[in-house]
Length: 245
Image 1 (cartoon, rainbow, N blue to C red):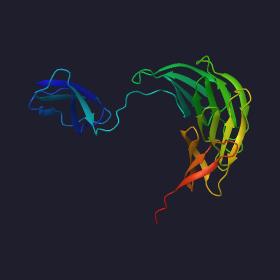
Image 2 (image 1 turned 30 degrees about the vertical axis):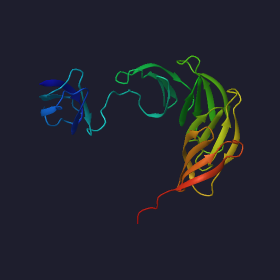
Image 3 (image 1 turned 120 degrees about the vertical axis):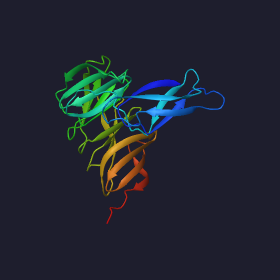
Image 4 (image 1 turned 45 degrees about the vertical axis):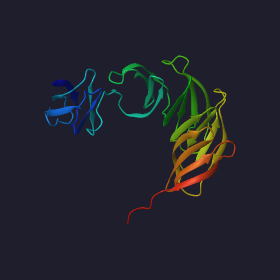
């Protein structure tokens, strides 16, 4: 019984049949061709018996499949807000509709007049790190036309950010970690900082309302307690692995 034709862009190593099966189980007699050509669409034909109506084929261990590409050159930062993806490339910010991942649509591009090193989207706000030039807040009430609001200087070169309620946590490279109060988008300010004896803060992620995870190069991953943002403190460290000898 011929059940399905499946298009894939990578080699299929294992097929799993999903759906109701007839008594006695599903029997697969053949899958042709046995393998595909990477980066080229291949049609697979599965022959067998006892396939119930509604069965479908899934491909496992064939590697990730390329669904689509977005032609934005030299992009250096991005942030997802619902089904809208904001992509920074140079001083430009593109807005891409990714509601259908296979067919993303670029809705528009604006020139921000600045070079973002990270983007963080939250509700109607977009936060941009500007390297050594601090943080800038944009209003996304009109998603296609971001409106610049306030800004705040931050010591260090900003590499990454994570939002948690009214707090924006940033990794500031050799200056360590900083938390900004962004409750007033027109007047954000640094509420607290933390520098470790060794290591550069290069990435940050929110764990929960009172904890963030910070990656310090050469030092390891550190869990910070930010329940009092004015005085963030180290709670636990996962040391960096030793260099191979």
